[in-house]
Length: 315
Image (tube, rainbow, N blue to C red):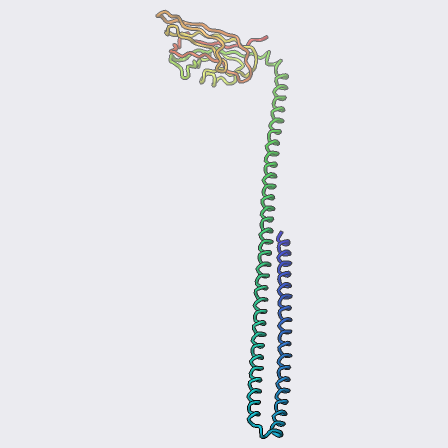
């Protein structure tokens, strides 16, 4: 684009230079013709004056020789001649003045014409430069749009690639889980999972989830510490499970629930009489990997006689 701009600028400057040179050449040519014409007129006037003076001298001599007696007429003739010469000189001066005025007028006319043509060329060049600048700006804007579109395409392609990779990873993970499940399912059915635990201190438990922190028996459980601290049994081996609990409280008619992943699957309530009571609750539920199972009781629980048993059922 810079090379194109330089070429157009050089062509415009060359055109303007040639036009100005041609114009100045014509002006000089006309000035030379005018000066030559004036020189010819001057030479003619000089010859005419010389001829006239020669004739006058000859005439005066003839008059002097022939008409010495007519001096008065001679004087009159001389006066007339002087007047004529003066008139001729006046005419010459007028003609010279007219020629000078015509010359100055021509020069001023050429100056004005040159100035007008220069202004016209300048306007054309400015318009050309503005057009080029506008086109360059359009090219820059188009290039920016192209780069933005390319960047958007690259970003979209990158996002699609990420989603594709995530889909592949998900498919591979799903296949792995299915494969592991297919391989481990026969062993899982034969694997024993069971726990029996009791409450270690009387209290209303945080979050109303009863903590059975005193474990009496357990088999096949790796995350026993989580169960003791949080009160939630986390399934490590999918299958069918049986849960049974006895809740000891003095709260009359207070409900308590067996929950799987925050969803109630069984419920019960304490006696409505004004006595302590031990209240049983049990349920059978299908658990998948990472499912949670726990007892939810929103009231005071006594440690004595409050226990829980969870067992995986072999099918």
